[in-house]
Image 1: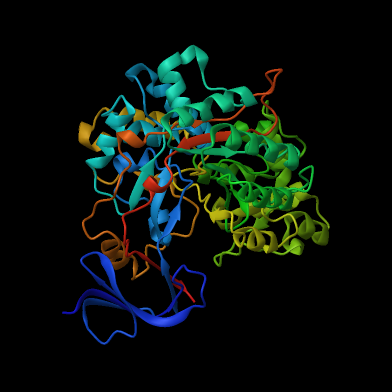
Image 2: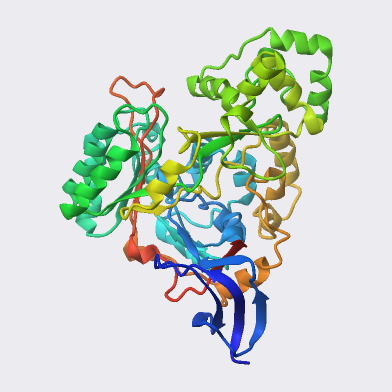
Length: 518
């Protein structure tokens, strides 16, 4: 055979920005050997007619820090054409870590990234203490895609300073400059930060630029179309990026290709009544029992007469935002129209939002989901996303793979699984056979498990079953965000992290292709 694999007849986007073309791709010894009209045969061939074929995507903003230690598949990223991921973002992770600090890092990851504690408790093997130890543990594993790790600042801060100095949610400029100084001393690394979305965009970018000027290191930040952000918003940040490039600064905006939002549902983290007193009383019951209780007219009347009660203003704001959510259907729609919002449909039906939402939640035996597009959707379309992604100083990222499982019914399950955990062999508790039963906490991204191209794509993406990993001399650090001077934590946070730049890419000649509907 001339090739190990030939992908035939796909619409090829080669990543150069040139027009796509219909062609074939031949792979040999784990690398792309030919592109064009290939007459030779492959030991395995894939018909990519009516499909799009692209280079593998590199997602520089994920949270597979735990999943990479217990699972072989970095799903859902690897299911959707991502061939290299960078983790350790937002300052959260699991190394370095002393044994008595493990619970704190688990709780921090659960709080920041919505990964259920029970998944991490069951799955993390903790066969490391230092960050180099963590890299060694990762290097001993076989994964389906390349990974790269940043040092999360929260873990580092606790490791060095102790639990009594837990990581702050908000960092002032002097602390951010100190972090950048560490990169300057090492003469390596990239500074990753999430600007405060509620602050004036011009002032936030001024801080970012000052950090880049201070450390003379590359800086990468989350760039979003934030509704009602003071200042000129994302457009002012694009203009700032252009000025920075002309002045010799290395700054890049990370752009999500879809609206940044969330899902609501009775079996997810939040829904319109998750903080109502009557619902809290049944929240730990199985879904079927909660649905049965909610169908009782007396219970319905009592709950609808209540209001949400929660000490966290962010939770209350998210619950209130449900009015702008859209009912999720079998055919995913990431660009829904304004007239399909819950509030618009409720008004058309002559009902209050609460009454209308209550009835919708009980559809499909309580499994109905609702999608709220928030950032990157302020005008009700993806035009802003297209403009941001087309800018020369931005990169596509922010899938947040490995995080945001979104399950709500955890407490009873956590207790029962902890009881069972001690009845199982240690190897099973660690998740060595497929992870900590993560099927119980399925992500909400469409699963592509029935994709006939998936297994072949994964095998050929990394024929050796291994991935490149940043080694000890390329360690950076990360930081979680900044606190207001008066100690309040209610306003949106900045989150920052640092790591290596070019050294964090996947292997040279990575042949991985993404095939999707044309």
